[in-house]
Length: 255
Image 1: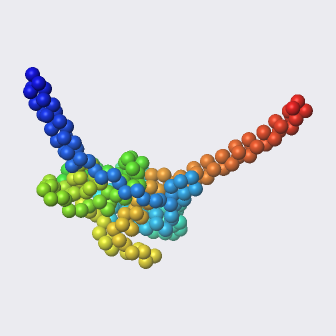
Image 2: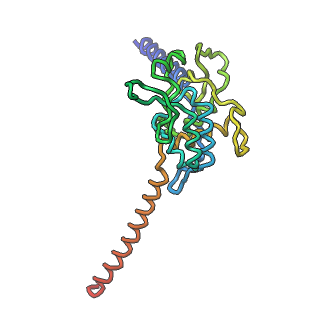
Image 3: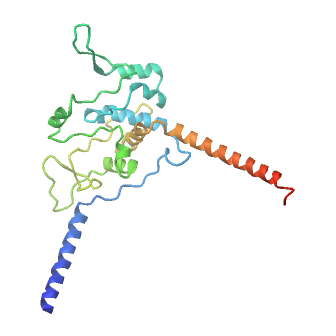
């Protein structure tokens, strides 16, 4: 009986060890912990970085990923002039209509239009990406645990797989992605874009810039919200001080 118990114990311990090893092999590494200028109570957007991030998205990411909640006129909040916003919108075409003949037609986009996606529908997106569906990036920073740190880590986390690890066909190895195998290839390459301000377009720099842009897209009213919160807190502090002073004056004779 004791031998049976010992045997079962050994089998159980071995099973736990194997399960732990397998889990460790497929679990992603914790994302890098970066410092972001827009975080914290007094954090604000680094508009130069966010503008550079928009360029990275437009020239690299937009070929697969959409931003269906972003209207061109929203770019004015990043410091683009009205003329620049119109010029950016005019680079795209949107489907409009119906016209007087009841037909849909294409026209140059206007600032009031939302940015069109790269594919006509989900089926077209899957067909162009071996069955994988590139997610819309409008809220991706809010939708992924780790937020900006995860998105940044994912973009810089591509590397050669460890010895003995076979990457399935059509997949790529990324140490920060759960399971490590991701359908999206490493889209950021050195000097993939040419920044107008002369900033070196390293992979880390482009990843950081586009992450800040996507964070802005997910929360474009962040600065306004923080400003309202700070103003409210200052008002409440002042009101509390006035009420306390009034209370002391009213009850001064009693004490």
